[in-house]
Image (cartoon, rainbow, N blue to C red; front, side):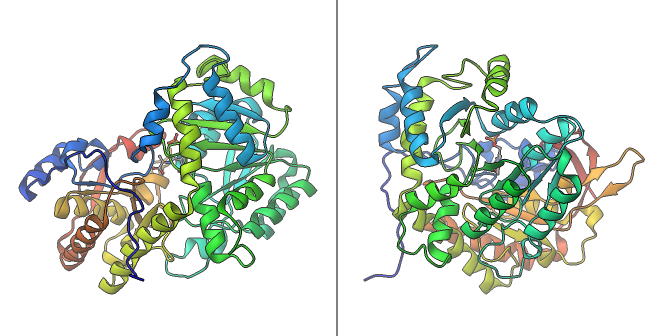
Length: 456
Ligand code: F0G
């Protein structure tokens, strides 16, 4: 049996990508204020900015698009999606939204109040921002290993149960619900074990609090459980997903990830305690309850995509892709969050640029260097994303300086990954000449998207 794990699909439709010269890339990046978010996608060769909404839909999904029911109210497509989601999650109520952050905004605005506290393993940036916008404190309680890039642990996304218990005991009155993010995107795309989800749900229950899961990458998390957690080797991924969801009272999802679609999101709720408030908020800003922020065709594509996202051959190939790049980085002596995550590889910029001061934003600098060297676009997950300029002008920094290379689903082949590994080796060899940056202009929320930088 050959050892190479192949892409378990063949390509039916192709889209050209363009190689630029290094002089062109320098000019383009400077024009983009040294912020890769401001580049035109056409000027990027391997676009690994995000795995969100960027993947390839299957022929079955494109087929489903044609049968979308575009009725304003009570569309067939809503009921089809609801039945798929009821089966996977065991939850009753589907509230469709146009993407994940809309689900967050709708839920948090309906359910939280100023002064609340929400624990999570790690809040994703939009989750944190939507909580903070509502005056809620977002507390990250991932286990210590989850913040140590080089430490091996099968479930680095686990929440620290002792600290969660302490928070619930101390601040219980302020906690409307607990959250857990699967996989933990901010901490390296690392999975959460079934045992941890189960224990966290039980802990919340003891304190009388519901559990809301952020389930963007639930299928990848389930595959990690199958591969790593004792007792699940022979359990189908679908059944693992069902068990994960069984511990939650509700969830928010950006369907642009494991939903395998280019746009979409939803909230699922087990009972109707929050339903009316959530639907009222939905109608105010997203749309009628049976379509939320989506077209009927989007609901259809998602109903198919959720099933495809749980396919085990696909998931095996998907997790292997990240692992394959990780093996090449290991051989080149480039640090990354270990083990590799589900949707991405997170480079540890401090291992490539050990002498660069935090004030020059080493992860941002590495991200720029990848574009300049090979036309690869990643995203900084470090102090530009999570640091802050306080009102008195002082800067705060994030403990980790990571660059995430996130892989769109079913898009790139092995040679793209081989190419990327070669680019990374080149970048490491030139590390001494990589320049840091300073923030010239920034916004109050989610500053990384729009910040303007200058060379430090
Ligand atoms: N929660 C997690 C864990 C996410 O990774 C994201 C999006 C969201 C919520 C928000 O969903 O984008 O549909 O509004 N993550 C993308 C990323 C943007 O690049 O990781 P959204």
